Structure formats: C-alpha cells, structure tokens
Length: 282
Image 1 (cartoon, rainbow, N blue to C red):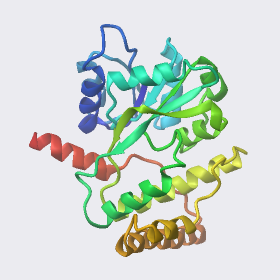
Image 2: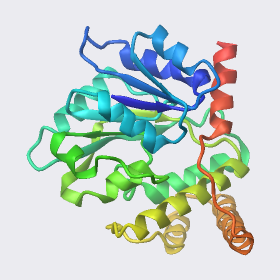
Image 3: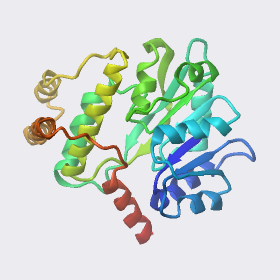
C-alpha cells in the first residue's frame, strides 16, 4: 500500500493503527511517502514500523510515483493518509481484483459526519445521495489495482484527481466497488471548505476531460436534485443549501476566470483540524 502524506502528523497514526491492527506479520507492504512535510509525519510513520520515503518535492502524483518505485507487491493499494481502512477490508479488495476481468476496485465509503455541523452536514447528505450510483472508484480515499490494472495507469500523471483518473481509465466492467469493504472518510466540515473542494474537483475533472478520458456516467444535472426532492429523500432546506453551493461555485469560477487565477490543490484543513481536536480529547 502506498500512502502519500503531506503534513499529516495529526491524522496518520489513527489510519495506520486501524490498518495494521489485525494484519498478520509481513502481510501488508505499507509505504508512506512524506512529501514536503514540515511536521512529524515521517516520525509517526516510522513509529508504526512502516517504510518511509521522504522527499522535499510536494505533490500527490509525485509521491505516488515514488511509492511505486519501491513497492514490490501486487495487488497494490493507494490510500489517503486521513482515511481509515481495516486489514479485513484490504483482504476483500485484494480478492476482488483476483476475479476474472476486474482490474481495479475501491471500498464503499462511509462518511464520518461527527465533526460536521450546520449547512455542511446538509451538503454532504445531498451529495452522497446524488453520487450513490455514480461514485465508482472516486471519493472512497482508497483504490486497489492488480498488476494488469496498474500497467494501464502507471506512471501516474500530474493531475489533481488521481482517483478520478484511475476511475476513468477503466471500463465499467473492469472496475467495481467492493461492497464488502468499507473506508471511513471524514469530509469537509464547513460550507467554505466544501466550496473550495468543489472548485478543486471541477478543475480536476477539466484536466481529465482534456486528457480525453470519458465520463461513462455522464454529467450530473440539477434534475437529479429535483428527483430527490420529489421522492422526499431530502427536504427544501437541504436542497437550498446545495443550490447555494452550486451558485457560489459558479460565481467563484467566473471570478477566477476574470482574474486568470488557478485553483490550487491541497489537503482539507477543516477535516484534519477536527480529527486532531478529537484525538486531543481522546
């Protein structure tokens, strides 16, 4: 497993403990790539007995490539540093890509909203329902490739959305969600952080469009939101919060276009801060 980590000292220990508990001796090859860190990310990883690579060069794609250079086993998993995944879930993912025709898989994400309050909680509720049948390999914080699948996507290009790139690189029958495996994902905790993430997702999708990678699911329209309202799966306040996010995103896109500004990529500070606070209370 390759785990890119940029200043993840506050969250890495939790994820590594969850992963390694229940794993047999030498069952998992875990490589943490600490990229451009100015905190104790590398120290935390070493304390858990995993292999550590340190680089002054920032960027997730570069970290993925460095991890690939030293990783020796397949199937191979790639995981975000703030995601919780158990050894049992890893075994399910590995068995999934051993099935004929399957090249890539991801767990089913479970979103921990314990630190999310107010409008952001409503946003995640709506988004989760809208994406339920469309997410695929993206959004779970983890994906797994067998050797044939890895050969198709490696080396990873410099794109914002590596999981989106992997998802779009495979036909629907070649990639599956392993419903028997779950990853715990902690999403953005505020409206502002959700907006920043949505802008990065938009830019990431534009990059993948430019690479000629198709969206097999098509684009998500507001008609899907109307369906959720009509079937009473969400309420008017939920829909209003989501429409406010869409409107704010469009204004931001217009303003950035006027200023010719780029959307920068980075980790979500709001969810990391919430996890650090929770760890401090524990």
